[in-house]
Image 1 (cartoon, rainbow, N blue to C red):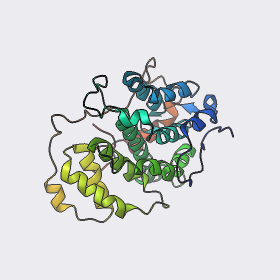
Image 2 (cartoon, rainbow, N blue to C red):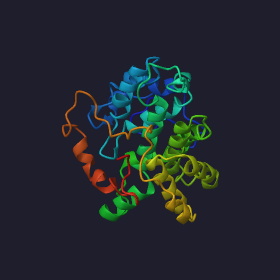
Image 3 (spheres, rainbow, N blue to C red):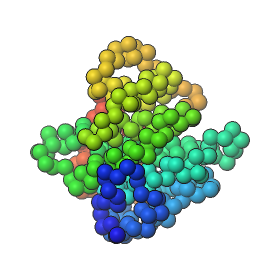
Length: 282
């Protein structure tokens, strides 16, 4: 099967397809990205599981940053998200940056970066963005790419869910934050399952962005967060992970992306719509 645009998996499947299947059975050159087509994406995606952490770090920018721009979702975003979900349990990522003697990994572990990207992309397709779009442009204004990504949320969640109990707090906390917008899908009635993880994060983490997302979620799920709000930290830990910024593809010039102009209206809609001031890390 060759995938022209939106689907690379059954959205109601229990898990994403094997990552090699996504690479081989997607017609990448036919898919739109903010910078042209996805012809170069297979090679970039494969480097996300390269043994060299420096290669993986560059791949995060080239592969993941290459399919999202200004809070918008493109044709190539869906198979890239499926690939990202499919490699979350890859052995290379399981060891990445979590060994005390790992002197070669100087940045964020690739596993955390991928989870962060999946979460940020899911927030760009959540109910708040849909509501803003429809309030601004009318009911039924949701574009095809956004609809397709939203249908894939159960598949992506199945891979993210496996990391909620990870031994490394940065992994499990980032997985939780990624899971929150994913479980908005009507087939996923698992809010109660995430509540315990949410309270664990609030009891142990000083990551301001993670805490804000979790507090927003608990409030949306009907929990009283008054006491939790009072204990919210005002600064990030000294050894915390630096905020991630939306990535630009090396060799491109901001503002010259061939498809970006058509998507700017979604940037205007979704950027900064969180009750706590930002959809992405500041």
